[in-house]
Image 1 (cartoon, rainbow, N blue to C red):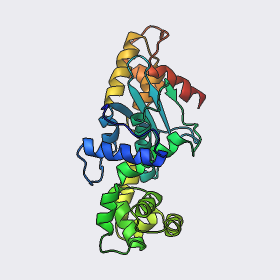
Image 2: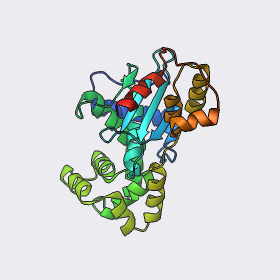
Image 3: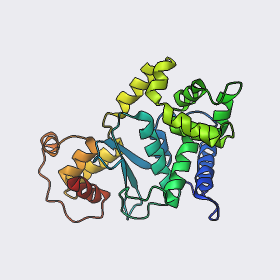
Image 4: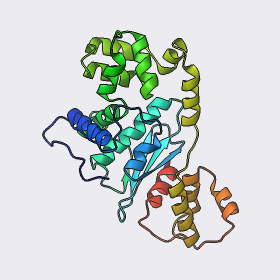
Amino acid sequence: MPSAFSYEQNASPTRQGKSLAEQFRRFYELGDDPIDRIESFTEHVNADLLIRPLPTDVEAISVKDPQTGNIVIGVGTSTSPYRQRFTVAHEVGHILADDIDRSSEVPQCEPNSPSETRANSFARNALCPLDGVQKIAQNLSPTAPGTLSKIIQHFRVSPSVAAIQLKEAGLISEEVCNELSEEWSAPKLASLYGWREQYNADALVSDQPRPSPRLVADATKGYRKGVVSPTAVALARGISSEQVKQELDVAPAEPQPTDSPFTELDAFFEEG
């Protein structure tokens, strides 16, 4: 992660998150363009993204290797694709703010804590930049559902994110922002304005487990050396431990104590 990313300590968490998002977009020359591949977020901060079913009350878990500093972001499969994108961006916001300083960051945070507010602000502004919102809303009625739909479709964000960004851009009031967020859903707008097939395709992808190639390779190597369990490989690939053993057809030594982040992942999912 570039050390150039920083924020004013005395600024509000919302402004801190916005600043980090602007730096992120500027550093990677993203302009006002939408981020098509959600994996781009994690690749930019050199973290591995793992998408698989998670316990009902958990949307994401970030695990940091205390020795190497490598981070694995685990995000739950979801039929709400734009919420999943926000969750990934939110976790990257935590990474950029250096919030993840323990080996395991299980998301049991206070929703309104400074770190959560900052990460939410980062996610909104990284996914849906204000300049881009203003360009789309130009010559359109900012209060119209059609404008909201265009922003959602273009940046692939939720109605609440799009509405908040319209408000932050000074185009609508807080009252209108709340009304738009409460009245409209992404699938409803997609059906009404003719892009439901795009939404359905996004939802199909977001509901599928997706392994991280680097994570799978590292887990497999560790398993064959006997330093991680088959559960870790199964977690990385989204398959059963039995299938891992059958496919690898090896008899590794019993896993030894290790500081590997897979130990944290094993414990978390066994408890879940």
